[in-house]
Amino acid sequence: MNITDEAIVQFKEIMRSQQATDAGIRVFISGQCGCGKVHYGMGFDNTTQESDEVLDQDGVKFLLDKEVASSLEGATINFVETPMSRGFTIDNPNAQGCECGGHH
Image (cartoon, rainbow, N blue to C red):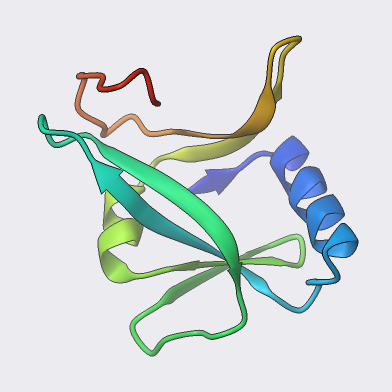
């Protein structure tokens, strides 16, 4: 899994503003479409599980269980800002090609 420099800057800013500088970023599966496409979520987590893979990039820890880690192999987390929205995106080349509910 790759994390862009812009995403790291934004993660650090959010962690500072939320006073969560010691926390890790848990990446988890938040849902799945009928076609099997997986949606991911992210949130702060202070607890590392024994089965977690921990990725440290520029001082930001990402926590992934084995299922998430294997499904995100080769994926990139980025921060995107447009006139209409801003937020983190996960570009996963392994994702199946269907869309559901307009979510990415």
